[in-house]
Image (cartoon, rainbow over all chains, first blue to last red):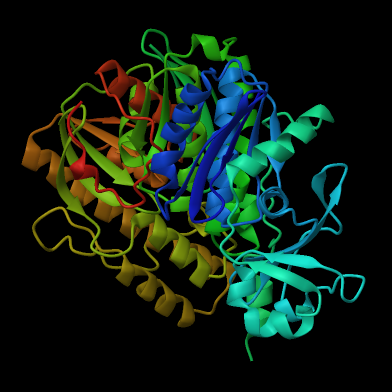
Length: 233
Length: 333
């Protein structure tokens, strides 16, 4: 049994995966994640009739996404894991979106583009391998014009994520021939974080809560004094 | 009651365990000063990124040092504000979820209340009521404290905080980051009486402060000097004397105005040796936290949280921080 949570976008979600089914909550709650996440976890545990102690591992959307959001998910997961002596399964938010496209639309090749602001997208390509969506390249933060094209022309890909809407004019001319569909409304969802975590759990991919870190991808967030000085004319 | 305290409001991650019976049991601190040094100031996003790395290992070390496990903890206190929102949020997310998972109460602590109560961690603590001088990089205020949780503002800085004035002046004199403590160190080599700067607002009644003009006076003096290392030290000395004199004059007024017999000094500038020596001459018993508890730390949060939890503080399982949170809005415990 896996508890999963995600607060990486304007949505907030929690899910409990059990052999009897997945119990979940998903709400669009910009800026209210911190109010909702613990009560939401409480609700899904109650619905699944499972206690935190009975959970085998805690999964969380570790990013990329809003920096504060992925840190809230990481912090909540760390706090719960420390309290209940559990280990953690960090799950990529982009992978969870690809998994959602697979489970809801049978998409087997997915290009995820999540708006990263500052003229960039969080980018990842995923394919169906061993029954689940797995990365075909390292996730990155990149300008839409530099997003790498899939290997083969006229292959059928599904574009997922709000980056396809935000940067439509830049992305579509290059990608239109590869795509069969675009889902711009998809946001990371704990249900699919949980689905991927089940596989990770079976592979033994569990991490000590003190050692997990959010995945930001954008790692240059400020200029040093020297860099600022160099910029001055 | 045994309380685990977690502080992440700015650039230090602090964790401590405080027992209402036995006092402080253990505390750990990780300072991010080196991380921010090359940026010339605290970068909020980097501070948050570091807190999430540090807090869990610090909790483990703190418990180990006190020879306790989480099962021994009765409540969790965390800094809920004021401070950097992302940094506060990191500590609050971990602390609130940990308390929820352990099914024990949690309380969001006001960072400045923590500072103000820090002298209670010492062997001979002050008794309520007292007057408190909160003096740090973010605040300069005089507060009357009739009892726990009741704070009446007597005066505060109308512009820069005293610590901020130290840091900014240090920068103008070309000292490294964080400049305040370096400026105080340099002042030790300075000669008294060669420069004299104003004692701002001491010619007016009341307990308000203004420190922003002092850095201009300092810069002008530096530009008009021969700019030797000795000049720099002499100017640093004069600057420090001006700040310390001003704080002392206002503290004397606050004591006279309230009739309190005890003065509590808290916050990072409270570590300044000249300030400590001069305040000790006031007609009141003066209490300082030990030097390591003048700056941000988990011990003061564990203590303040323990007192509030012991008084019955309760909060729902929501994670809430208040980056801006006037001390006077607190209610008595």
